[in-house]
Image (cartoon, rainbow, N blue to C red; front, side, top):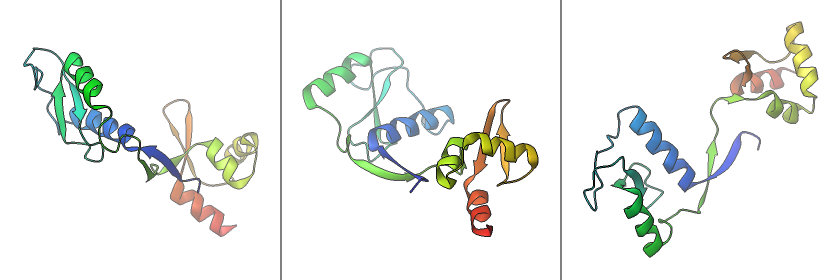
Length: 137
């Protein structure tokens, strides 16, 4: 289905750690958990299916760990995820078998599903609005 994307646990875990650090949910220490060297350590996953369970390792210790142990658990397992509530005009054009130029014309004429402009340049369609519009056709 168009709204589902397959991602591996590794990509999901790395993204969740990044977001958690950015939002203050996880605090990155100023030194490596293993060698205690002052640095900006990486969030290391022993098991990628537990995205916020990380050890903080300097690059050297991180590379050494993976060199000795290989990938963390579930690194290459695939998981179905539902994308955020927005889709691109390209996604919508594939879904309804219409050219992106047709969607552009519809937007200028006030026809088609509701859309939003994100920033100055990106047009996005809310998935729920698209589903309602398709059902109404």
